Amino acid sequence: MLTPRVQLFVLRLLLCLSLTWAGPAAAVDYLDDAAYEETAAEANVPDPIEPFNRAMFAFNDTLYVWVLDPVATGYSKVLPADIRGCIGNFFSNLAEPVRSVNCLLQGRFRDSGLALSRFAINSVCGVFGLADPASKEFKIAPVRASLGETLGVWGLGDGFYLVVPFMGPSTLRDFTGDVVDSIARSSYAPWNDDFTTSATVYGSNSINRVSLHLGEYEEMKKLSFDPYVAFRNGYFQLREKKRDHLE
Image 1 (cartoon, rainbow, N blue to C red):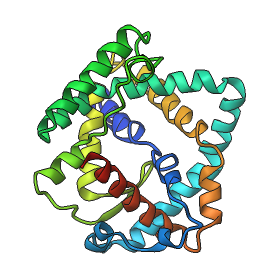
Image 2: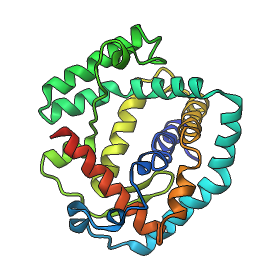
Image 3: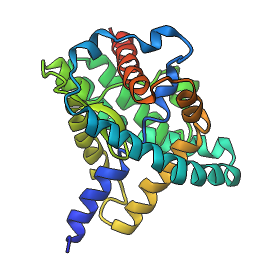
Image 4: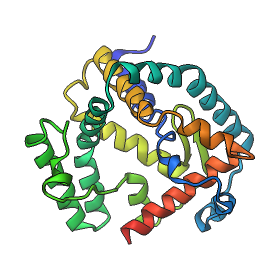
């Protein structure tokens, strides 16, 4: 039988990373032929375990259609969009210290300071991050940074393409970075030592995230000739756009 500490680790691994693919992939226009063209990054990242990845893609798809989407739809009818947005702001703000450290490790010292400034302003003036005065009043735009990006800056290759259960498209490097980032975020969360509370909090965060993007996943899948390939392309295109934004 798993000890409470091991159970908590597994919970963080699954719930902190759960289904972030529903939102980011929406940035890709699947009516555009370019959405089906390989990016330079994708061309250099092999997919040697495609049968496994396709099986995991099918698992995530089934989980979304039969569990997450119905629950998130009901959730959205109970809580107004403004309140759900505040919940999203809270969890985004909670990740600012981790972003700041990754910026520092990447040599982006100004961005590291901006991320810490956002955390301080939103925690104090935004009622623990429920609001985002750092963006609205102080004009400090959100900073993007992850350990996967940090490892890439240090010269570590992607490894291979990977579809992770409960998470979606990734690479071996990015998935490893996401796991470490998630554990780091959980380490200073006020509920990190209680399994039941952690399950409730992170599960609610996942449902809240999906509720803010209802209908997008179905629309993208409907417009795709091969959803697996389309979402793989979309993942690498989104990552390229994030990288270009930092340069």
